[in-house]
Image 1 (tube, rainbow, N blue to C red):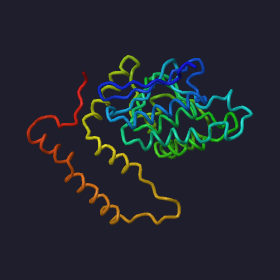
Image 2 (image 1 turned 135 degrees about the vertical axis):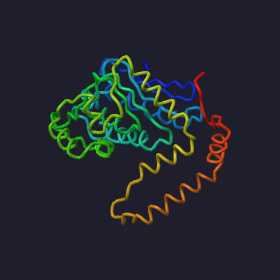
Image 3 (image 1 turned 120 degrees about the vertical axis):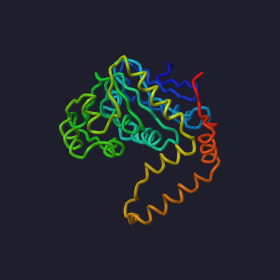
Image 4 (image 1 turned 180 degrees about the horizontal axis):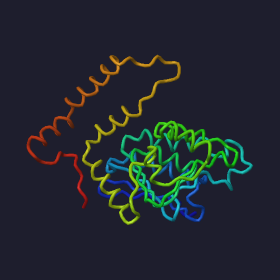
Length: 262
């Protein structure tokens, strides 16, 4: 069986490539399984400091493979796989960067939203097309809604309208939309910035950003949040990485964790 998702680790960057252009990188059972496996491998690999999620072909990801899901039971539709993919990306202790040279639809947009940084070519388009085929963008809403402006979320979820990269940037789905010939340079720029971060500090910062209040739980007061954040900050100032970072700053040199290409 030909592999549909590839993993390559070089110079601290784990590149995961969706390579099923014949079906627009749709989330088939095989692609979902391979994507999950490669995400887990990249997250566990100490040599990987940043994960870049990219694709071959003209489409980043078209969402679920409708040929497979038509007439299938909930279990067969990969109901469990997609949340696992989104959660792995969202909670990865390593920053995840989405590189889009083409379109994303439905579940593919959910993957883009789960990533920490998302950069697309200006020609890329997006759509929450679920309502137009009689389904609900329920699972992907968990990662999409924290990114989108509320008014835009109502409009785009309910209409299913196709929108461009400039609009996607304006409503919070993308960090940047650039000319196609500048896409790789912009991705590299973000990767270089992320590689300057200390691994443990990046992981803790991601966990802090992803904090959510459990259903039925009393939201923390501002004082409680400050106490928690003060403890987190103090711990990292005293830890080995914090001490090394401050020494490196004083000595005008890169910190020990800094990775340079080649």
